[in-house]
Length: 312
Ligand code: 3PG
Image (tube, rainbow, N blue to C red; front, side):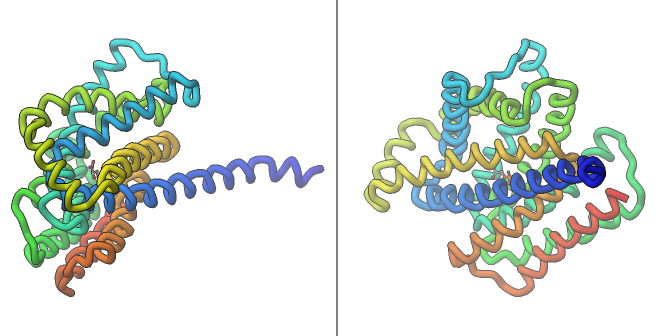
């Protein structure tokens, strides 16, 4: 009996760890699939503003159906909730479209190497915009992150300025998204899953007019015929897969954000990029020079150091 009582806390702690482990594994796996289909689509159909919009539209539709059929309980929201969600949605929209534009111009691995520099942006924004200060080791850990990203960028065989800037803008936008998300989710009864659903819907409203203005139905229709004739009917499935997997990986990431600290979240996100970089290099036969790979490795190691000094 006694051992049962003593052990009562242990299984729940272990169960929580298992749950988070499952969230992380699912998040990474879904993200790898998203990145592969997204790039396959962009190679045949280079309209990143449309594919970004479709990802948000698909997620919004999936969640509306889930709420209508009560697969998921709809959230109780008020105008105040949507008001605080607005800046998060602006940042999510910019970060999403910028990353997709980047991936339409450069290798998936290159975009993610630059995106592994996100912790550096987080510290710089917190320092210079929010006025927070950090211990010296935190600043020192930024050196390998920034240096590694810079080395990977200058040795990239297919360097492209739009590709590079897109990934940098995405880093900056997602730092703001994470800061605003944290504020918005605090003390609210809306779950991580529903919070991301609302975020998708608001981002869709923001992005649609811009996607029409930048690309527009004429380009989309002409490109569609070309893609269909090159790839065949499975092109539609690629578009569906990139859209569905985009929503699912983000949903799982917000579900895990509900349970863990933002720091654990950002470490998990950078570790995720290792699986994306490796799998996309294999699948798309991306040419990599040793010095280029070294830059990526230094940047990722820098994030490890950052997470260590940050948590102590
Ligand atoms: C996007 O399209 O939003 C980016 O691929 C997002 O990248 P991340 O979720 O890996 O930061």
